[in-house]
Length: 195
Image (cartoon, rainbow, N blue to C red; front, side, top):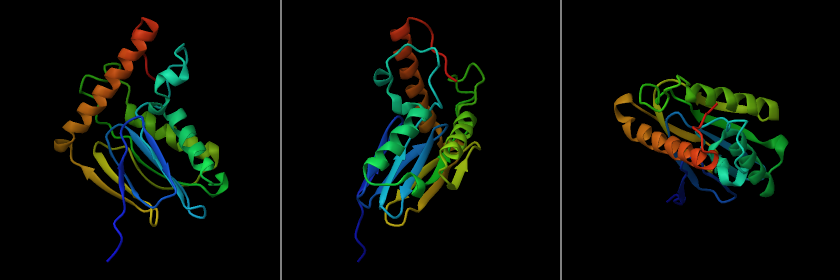
């Protein structure tokens, strides 16, 4: 009988790195999750972020900003976490998922900014600049995704969530955006801007 693997659920703004074979899971709408692994060192990790980067004029200290929610830091945190566990940058491989256009029309994107498309563009550019091959991807579109990253063979099992079933994901992402926006307003005293 095959050994059952532990499962770890990753929420927006989080990441997880492990040498232990396990299943990393997440639920995505506009967010993007990147699955990174070094097959030789047997190290794997996943992140889950909603915004490609924080506003460049932010005066908020990085550690107070929940850096993992921003793609640029979420990727650095994930890469560095794998390197600390023995991975080598030249052996890293990536799989990326999410970036759907699910928030438009739900009040969270009144500035007509397509967060999903920005996330998809960001992650492709980041991986290309860092020289990390993107060997599998399912980015964009209008459907949410459920992702399971398997530590035994680094395969990713993905299920698309139909528009009719995406309400929970949209609600979670809107709450996450609202918390980020409130946090920024409290820090700076002005409305938040997201790029």
